Structures are given as structure tokens and as C-alpha cells.
Length: 204
Length: 217
Image 1 (cartoon, rainbow over the protein chains, first blue to last red):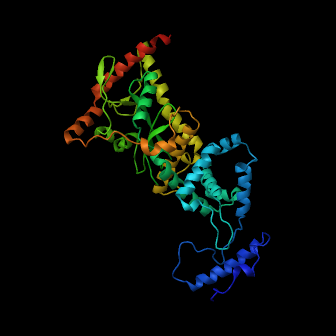
Image 2 (tube, rainbow over the protein chains, first blue to last red):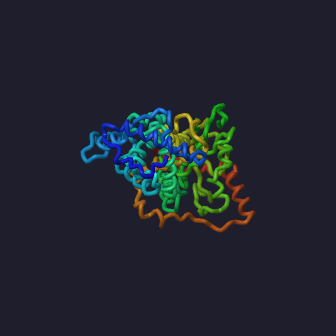
Image 3 (cartoon, rainbow over the protein chains, first blue to last red):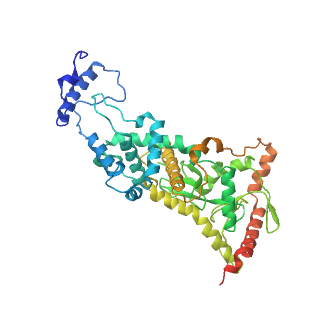
């Protein structure tokens, strides 16, 4: 089937009330396209016919997250943010911005259907929650509306970006100023020329 | 996946922490049957010293000269001149005072691990979900964020603006690549037991001189 002349957007109304219908149509279209391109599969194939579709309301998730923590008058205070994220709001936004600038994956994109995709804050929050709370990735779709696989993808991109952007500075070998400070702290505590204490931790 | 000496999968993180809980050095290994000591043998922390890449400074404690800096460590670490360990069964007030000071300073690193684990629960949980490369990234990212939080909350009175300093400030003293002879000499000096026990004795004296009067028992 040749659907280059087929105007998808005119044919269907992407109203908020009918996303399910739109997704169902999309499934059929994508599946047909796939049967035409047999043998040239890429990693991302979109919807697969016969698979269960979870209609995650990305927009709602984004809005809720934004209103809860990042809006001008957020639902939760900065203290609550600090307690839940283990990180101050200022620092969290700094990390999110840096990560977004480093990897275009975190920029909000538009899906092929013309729907806005996951926002940077959603992806970063999902990755951060997996790291900070140790939750399994499929829990992120309840509040943040991020699917399990996307959550894992975000986490991978997030930790990589952190290491690449901040690693040089925050995991540096002590430079001369640092060494001086470390030594003076050591000296004050009665251990002249002491650099710090060393030990091992086991991650089981 | 990575079965360690605890008979279950384990990853060992070797770290150096300072009083503000900043983690200065983090090195981890995943292969089988590692314990704290053979991680140490692979760790780059003393390699840099042995290759002469860190500046040597002469200093005197209790009228003895030393050239190398040291770390506080617990009992299982080897008797190298770069570690100051506690005394397990101290005799006499002076010798009892030393371990109390040493342990109160050494707990920094334990505390840093504790804080790291409670901030990033993933580090405490099971590791088997991820592949090796990913584990390294997760661990590093957690430590980086841990250090960022410390800086952000100003526990350490950091006196610089990181955004501007990043490029200009990173200059570790990299000396010339030494001859093999020098290398071996430093290597031996790090592992020198005599220096180590001398250093411990001198520190005992030093601490006692400085703070002994506060200690009334």
C-alpha cells in the first residue's frame, strides 16, 4: 500500500478524547508499513501488531510532575523537594540542564504522530528516581508515565551524561589547592600530612 | 554474576574520603574473588605515587623526616608507610589515645559510604540487573552527584566557582616519567614497614603532645 498521498492528520482528529482510536489506527498503519519493509528492521519499530498497547498519558504525567515540583507555585515546597530528591531544586535543575545540553536525547521531541514526547524533566526524574530510590524501572510509569524500557533508556543516558559532563571536575584527583586544604584539615585534627581515610565498600 | 569472597556477587568500591565526606578517589573492580587487598594492588592510587607523579614533600613529625603522605586505614590494610592504622590492643594512656583519634578520623570514609548508600539506594540494592559497563557508569554517576550535593550544600567551604574553574584549575603536578630505578625505590618506600611503624610511633607522640592534656582518664 502506498500511503504517501494519504493525509493522516486531516483524516483523524487528534483530540484528547480519542487518543486510543488514533493509536489503534497508527498500529495498523505501522504494521502495514513494516510488512512492506521486511528484512530492513531497525531497532525501533514502533507499534507491533498484536501487542498490547498501554496508553500512557505523557502529557498528563508531565503536567503533574511540573505542577508538583517545578511550577512557579508548586504543590510541594522546596524543602519537600530536597527531602524527596535528596538534592536541592537548584542543583537538580542544573544537572537537568547540563544533561539536556549534552545529549539531545533529553530534549522534548515530537513523535511521528505529532504528539509531544516525554519532557526532559520526566526523563531525568525517572532516571533519578531509579538511582535514588532504587525502584524497578517499571514503577516509573505510574507517576511519570514513562514506560519501563524508556525508563531504563533514560537511566543509561542519564548516568553516561553525568559522568561525561561532571566527571572531570567532581571525580578529579586532588589538585594543589585541594591537597593544601586536605592537609590543613588533617593537621588541625592532629594528623599532619594526612590526605584522608581509605576503605572499601561492597556492593552486593 | 561477579562472585566475590563473600560467596555472593559483589562489587568492591575502594574510596578515599575527607572530613566533609567528599569522595576523592573511587576505584572499583568486578571480577571474581577480590577482596579489599587485591583491589588495592590494582588501584591506581599508589601507582601515581610510585611513578613519581605526585610532588614529594619533606615534612617532620616528632623530629623524624618523612617524604610521603598517608591515609588512615583499618586493620586489614597492609603495613605500608602510606597507611596509618589503629592499634588493636593499646597499652598505656598515650597508646590508648592514639586509636581513639585515629578511629574518629577514619570513620569519615565509613560515613561517606553510609551517606552515599542512603542517598542513592541503587548502590545498596542488588547489582545483577545491569551489565558491567552500566554498573561502572551508575557507580560513578552516584559518586559525582554525591560530591555535587556536598558542594551544593556547602559542607565544605569551597572557595571557588566551579563553572569557571573547571578548565583553568585542573593541573595536577605531573613530573617526568622516572627511571625504573626511581620507580622501584618509590615502590619499596611505599611498602616500607620500618617507616610505617616509625611514623605510627611519631604520630602517637605528636598527638599526645598536642592534645594529651585534653584527655583525662
